[in-house]
Length: 139
Image 1 (cartoon, rainbow, N blue to C red):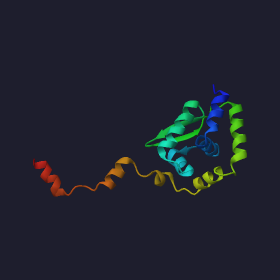
Image 2: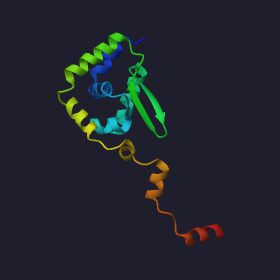
Image 3: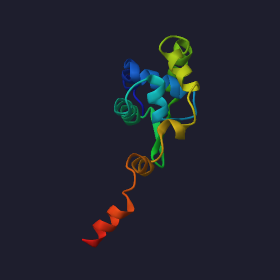
Image 4: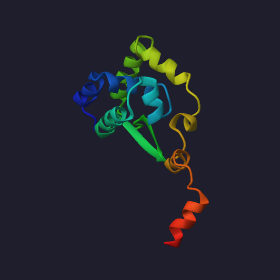
């Protein structure tokens, strides 16, 4: 069961608060969407999302290389009411309005997050010339 102090500790950190405000307005968001919208690094975002998940405020699901987050559907009614009132009071204020705007201006998730790692490696490292492979295989 979610304790009140756990919720309010999460809300006390600006990055976690901004994440929760965005997640409250969306069905779910990918880590890359949150990093782009909040203009923070992926490690920082992942650390804060892990804290929110451990506190029971968000739930995640994996799809291939991507991790998607949503507000925990099992949140108690009182916690949903606190989040709803918080979002209503902050959504049009900076930096929350700017976060939402950056999120709406983003392109499709596959383009934001980039191709899978294997594809990135193949693009970053061109194939060796055939003669080099033949030379290596003769050894």
